[in-house]
Image (cartoon, rainbow, N blue to C red; front, side, top):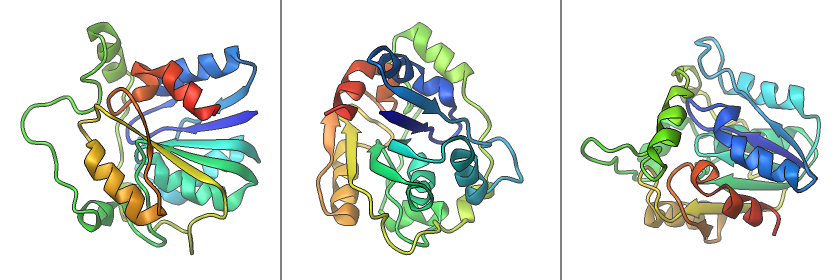
Length: 205
């Protein structure tokens, strides 16, 4: 199968690398995408174009976190058999990223907490931080250019130790917006780094 992996905010293909390696070891084709998140001129449309340019079709599009906005539009643009959200933001048609937080009644974590990599070993967490990129504000006010949820079978998985999108919050949002409860894997907001085998096992079920 061909998997297209879309990163979240300020992230890159590196943050998918354990999952990429595991999928390839199991005989699958993988296209991990680098979005132009540090380009102040690139909006959501350019993010989608970046994915479509490197993948004209996919068996499975997998989107992490903020990548849910990009992935939803990609699934409207290319032939896709399945769309999987990993700790993913679920957009409404026409919704802006900047609106999503208020629309979902999101409550930010208080205090000095590493909401991205808190569950990772220190060395891996350090490298994960070093691999982060600048995230431009440019896409935040672009509407999600779908008229309805893509006509593609969709699954969602959340991480039980996620501090950025706590499980109860993301269960509710997924249920309200997609009509089903998400599946669950262990780990924090980046389960593809902390629990790559569990993520791959899930993707292949």
